[in-house]
Length: 79
Image (cartoon, rainbow, N blue to C red; front, side, top):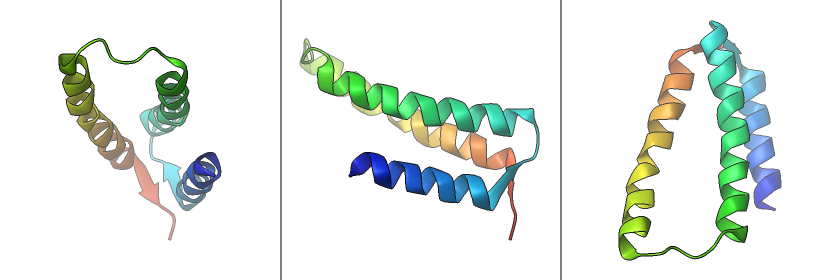
């Protein structure tokens, strides 16, 4: 179900925006590939080795928000 929601959201965003430059296209597809890979690795990977590892990964997730902002700055709305 989560995968279906992810694909629907990605499809809606892709169909309602257009890449303003090559970065807009590459960054979008890189994120679309990166997110499912991280999801699968979190399921099949070993448990965290320490509390510090969990803390670091939690803070690192904020980079994904910046990545999304960067993508959006390199795409424009079709409406």
